Every structure is written in structure tokens, then in C-alpha cells.
Image (tube, rainbow, N blue to C red):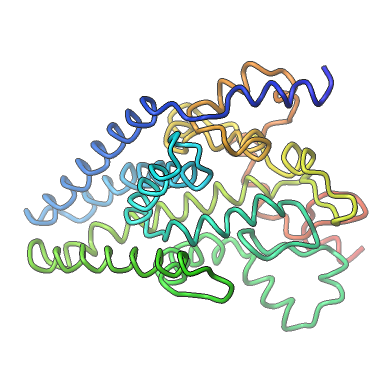
Length: 328
């Protein structure tokens, strides 16, 4: 089958099913807030903190899932109405500490520039080529090594991003991006104020800090593995191909059923980049129905951890490599 034919077939999976979206929200929100309520109960009744930490794991999973709903809303794929997507995305943004419109803007830039070496810097993970690293100053090399270190990338950066960076305005933002940040911050402040007069701020921190920490780490890992793997595609603007950027610049992260559910099937990332208007609950069906999409070699759950030690993209081999290539 020619490329234009199977790309045309994928279009049939675009578009929201409002009933499915409503059901997803109902089930996910109900279970998420039930777990959060149980965590507050454990704090109030002075149970050992480790019991609360056990519940923080599924709560973080649900928060990742809620972020996927925000993600779909940012592409206007979750509801038929763009207004409904904006309202739902904003609510999900409050839960996940993410200003909806500001994130939508940066994520849109990511989709338009993914795998383009000349348009790096917005909505992506800092990636240098071998030649760029060799020519960089010592200070830049130090910064890069710190940034790409797994301890920083997954232990410090995710929490800092969601709790601090997303609270602050920045250059290049639109008015509605700024208002989105202000509104999200105000809602978070209102929730903390309500906690102060009810369960207490200490209880709020005990409940939400481990949840947002784990959820941000899981989310950062998913984004990392979707675009950081050995044979990932990168190209300069003159040779950049959007289909290659989707099919070879985005991974198919094969996850067990439970993790696939919590991550909203975002592991089918090559399909998502081909057609961002496909909602999360149709990605797997699209993959199963179109053989051309199955030709991508999947990144398995544990094999993905090898990518942690791939730091630079080598323009000569077209692969991600580690620092040992610099000695050659």
C-alpha cells in the first residue's frame, strides 16, 4: 500500500466520541478523587505515612491519565466542541498543576518542529549533536551533562517544572497564555486556602507532594522515551519530512495493558504525531487495523531504559550515542 493510501486511512480514526470521553472522565475522576480522599483520611487518622505513600502510586497514575486528557484537549481531539476541550483541559490543568493554554502553545510548537535540528528548544528535551558538543564551550558541556544526567532529568527537573516553572510567565507568551497561568495559580491557591481551613496545609502537602512528584517523573519518562531512543530520526529543515518525523522521530512504546491504560495509550506516539486529532481511545485500534503502522520496531518497557545512557545524536550514523563516541 502506498504511503498516501494508508495515511488517508488513518484519518478515519480522527474525531471525538463525546460519550467515550465523558465515560473516561467519570471513571478516572471518580477513582482519582476517591484515592485522594482515602489519603487525607489516613493523614487525619494518623496512620503511618508509608500507608499513604502506597496510595500515592495509583494516585500518580491517575494524574498521568488526567494529563493525557489535557493533552487530547490541547489538540481539540477530546470533544467535538473546541470550547468543551478548553474547559475540560483547564480543569485537568488545575489537577495536574499545568496552565492549559500556555502548555497547548508550547506543545503545538513541539509537534511542528519535532526531529527538526534547526527548530529545537521549545517543548522538547535538550539534545545536542556530536559535532555541536565537541565545539561547545566547557561551561555549556557541563550544563549539558548535568541536564542529561538521569538523576537531574528525572529526580529534580520534573518536580521543578510542574511546581515552579509552570507557575511563572515567560517571554513569547500570548495574553491568553498568561491568563491561563494566572487562573491556574489562583485555583491552586484557592485549593490550598481551603485545605488550610479544613484538613490543614501540612495534610495537603503530605498528600499531594508525593503524588505530583511521582506523576511528574512518570510523565517526564514517557515524554523522554517517545523521542529519545537509539535510531531516532533527526534532520535539518531542508531535508525534514513530517511523516518520517512522526514514524521515525517518535517511538512506539509497548507497555503492559495496565500501564497503557494509565498512560492513555500515548505509547502509540508515532500514530499520535501522524494525526494529533486521534483521541487516546482510538490509537490502539488504529494501530491494530493498519499494518503499515505495525512496521515500527517497538521500544519495550525495560529496553527503554537503555536510552538513559544515550546523550548525543550522531549526524554521521543517524543514531543516539553516549559520550564514549567522543574518544573515537
